[in-house]
Structure formats: structure tokens, C-alpha cells
Image (tube, rainbow, N blue to C red):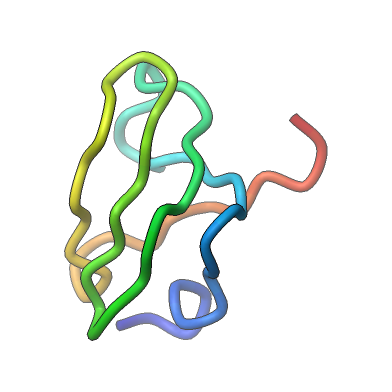
Length: 60
């Protein structure tokens, strides 16, 4: 898991760097590098934190 992904906690807002069409997502869980995010336009997605560094959204 990347350093940025390690700080992600449930409730935080994120974007997927390669899928801007998914919109902003809310972290549901972050367990062992598997990050479950509920994206506005895509729904619930499980991300491999070792392959994708999610981008925190500070001001949606």
C-alpha cells in the first residue's frame, strides 16, 4: 500500500486518478491494502491500494 493510501480512513473523500468519470468517492474501509470506496457515478468498488494511489479530496 502506498503511503497516501495508508492514511485513508472511512468517511474520507477520494478520487481515482485513472477514472475521473467515477466522481468523488467515500472510503468505506481500508483493510490490508484493500480499500472499499463508494463512488458517486460507479458505486462500490474495491481498490488494490498497492496498485492505485487514490487522491484525497480536500474541498469537494
